[in-house]
Length: 295
Image (tube, rainbow, N blue to C red):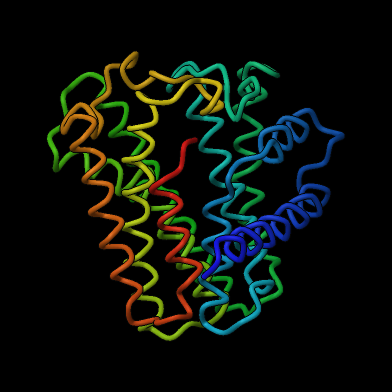
């Protein structure tokens, strides 16, 4: 598969999501409100859109039009963005930049950023409720997003992340942290695509196993880049993990060990796609690109 085919497909997915996000912002995050302006500032400020892309690709791999899943993908991006705004707040990671620009609370103020994030998470569920899919699909999508983003998913991971700023995490604890904080929403991305396409159970199983592995690779590479990349490359402060005395895969295994762990999990992710055959070409390349990313 030529790499330009992958690049073109990725761009097509992102373009579809960006267009729909603009439309949804006009519906649910009006610029007449300051919190709407702040929410749009963070949501529309770029980003890799990996989760949204995974949602659309997971829908298409079931033989359905990925446009069916675009509202679910946008809802996931909204919820993910709210978590980033909260992550940057002084009471959390206290980061002043995000995606190469001032964090939401620096561009506006803490109270506005907090409310903008709240507006994003509530808008996400409004988007799902009004998506042009069956009631059964929408109920499943709402449950999926709530579970992935809630106290049994991402939020629990954020709690653990704060906890291990003050205590050294073991390997098992670190894996649990990132299965929740990063992995839960990446798994939800695959599940949302399957819900949009009414995928067969075997397809859903393969995609969720793949997504779980990719989520771990994503976090390991994040830890590696925190010590190997510059702030300019990352678009956010480099070295923040060390500054916050966090346990990372680099502090546990060293740089070389973390790189090998990422490579092993990448191989496991690719193996999970074996039952899907050639139709999984895009997701196979996505996994490779996430392993090699530099920002």
